[in-house]
Image (cartoon, rainbow over all chains, first blue to last red; front, side, top):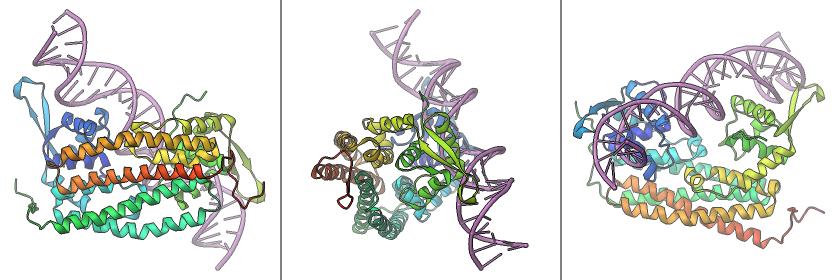
Length: 195
Length: 195
DNA sequence: CGCCCCATGTAAGACGTTACATGATTGA
DNA sequence: TCAATCATGTAACGTCTTACATGGGGCG
């Protein structure tokens, strides 16, 4: 399958297109107006990214002429695209990901329910929880080690990071509880339809 | 003057060199072993970055031959480098910075005390606190708006972001209290150190 | 008519990643 | 002597940023 690496922006696009077909312009507006403002809404990033995804066979574009507007290309996930998205979502959370910043993990989680089903969401949460539980003692150790040598602002900065991870760990527990509370009534259908 | 933009890695290097002179290799080790592991320790990033800083006159390198080791270039901040670092640190915190992820703000804060004095640390904290206080209601609004349309995992992801910012806001308050508790002194001296 | 919004795209440049290259010194 | 570690660097490549380009449609 597409051996090429896909950028974070690429996965964000796949995830959004999985929710509903959209044009490049629509996607830009999502990035610029919703909580996903951390992703670039610049055309110089999005249009090339869409082209790459299309060349990899992960999305398909169809040109609309409706309503006399300018040509407008609406993209949809292919079955391969859906599979790639699912594989990305269900990857276990690694230490490197946690260190680099959890935003990619959160992106995966945000799409997980619709794209890979509730079990995938729960799996991701468990994986994140496990990794955080292993990583936090490490940070506490560093705080203890550096206490003598670091200036006040330096150790406070470290403290901020620790608190952030602790909050995140608590959140994973609460989120797991949320899923446990909900009976799995609204079960997403997970098997790809034939096209 | 150095009108050129400086990357986050560049500022991280300036901040570390402000604390003590170091070689490229030393800096790589700091990135790969301490809590600053979120920055790249690859030579392909660090050596070019150091060269750019040198070309901009922000650091100066001197070659050491001591102890029969291979040539080793130790870098130091110039006065211009120190000024640039200070100007970066004392910039007010913007909304864009908060959205993009607070790691650059935390980097500024971590260096603030040594590089720009305690007043700068307090200033940064106040600026961050103000920006967070303005931004959080915005996120709460988005959560309320999206409650109906978002899947469980999506709204939980947003919830995680909100909690993260709330934790950060609480941290700024605690950090300000920490500075307020400590008697004013331009230089931080640990109680063990003699003056 | 002029201006702004929709909608798509390209071009130049900067930066980071990965992989490779080089060479000296230390220790098994 | 051979491997590992110290120490510095380059080259190819991909991606993002910024800025610019294009063109139709609605509106005052």
